[in-house]
Image (cartoon, rainbow, N blue to C red; front, side):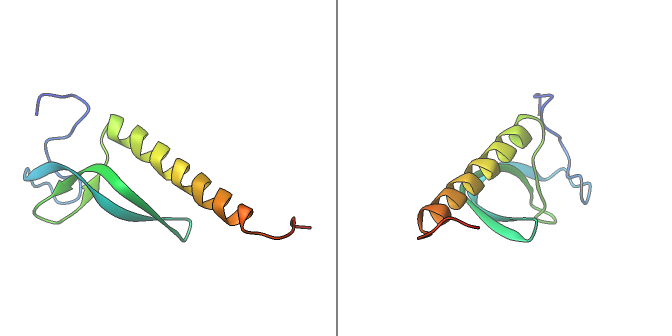
Length: 84
């Protein structure tokens, strides 16, 4: 790979058999499952590890943050009274 933002090997097992992928993925953030419908990442064919090099990491963090905010807004909208 020519892009300096990407690794050319798996950081978990060292395999060079990695590929770029966009797929649904559920992450766990502080014990809370957060589903991202179009998660863009690198995946290792040898050990199935998922990594987020460079710009992918920034996009991943933004998508997780945005999804949590959407879920929290939906939950707050469904409450019939304000918390005390």
